[in-house]
Figure (cartoon, one colour):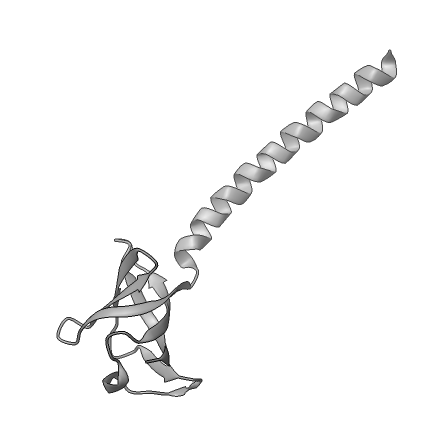
Length: 113
């Protein structure tokens, strides 16, 4: 009888410990998600050089990507120019989300036209 009670107590303590650990991990993940580099891979459906934006579609989801003069442009691991951007091009965008949920690109890699 004592063994059963001890095992039940140990199981309860382990369960509480795992639950507390899971909550702490979720909070840490939520904080780091906004700080981590974001990645978006898709096809350019619209580009607006005046507003410095690209609309990139991945499946049925479109996301507007903002870029600026500090954004690095690459094509097959080599430097590229913004003039090489064409609608219909496959791109990988790396950047960070700002407080409003807007993706600010730090690097845009042109994959293929």
